[in-house]
Image (tube, rainbow, N blue to C red):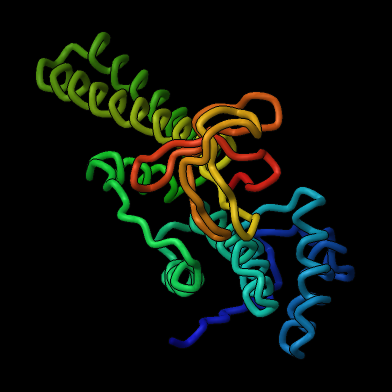
Length: 256
């Protein structure tokens, strides 16, 4: 399998704001330095530059994807999966992200039969992630204003045909506004309030209770994606893709 390293050496106008034509933003310079290091095969330095940006609060599918690439090149499979998953949340239709995530997952130990999501939930999540939460919120607000405009047409027009058209167009605009608001809230939950996590410890014994004295239920390995169901102190209850549940130390995983 060929690893796709589609670096985007950027003039990242969509990611980093360039203050004026004569000076490049320090964040963009740091991103491009990371790109140069990666191209030279210096993956440690590239990772240092990009994770520095991530720690500073910069977020984008491109940055997450490139961090995942650097971790993959360094042999850190859990790290690569974590950031590929984060990149996929921001750009779910990107083929390079999906391809590299598939390669990284193929290098993990655990092979579990995943309980499939309902198709309408899967499509709802996909649509929610096509645009950012802010973009969906803007669409919702604009649609609501348009709805009010058509309602005005319905109430104040003296022509029957105009009143009918105004009413149905107002209903349509209202439905678009409510759907967009729903997508905005779902997008925010998926990206900023995720309950998905990646196991980082090489081997983890899941317990029946949130303490070391609990009965061992099953063993899992690094790179596996799980859902976090509950938290007690330094323990988290996780659910595996096949539906099994158990308690693991909080420091054995990283939230996507």
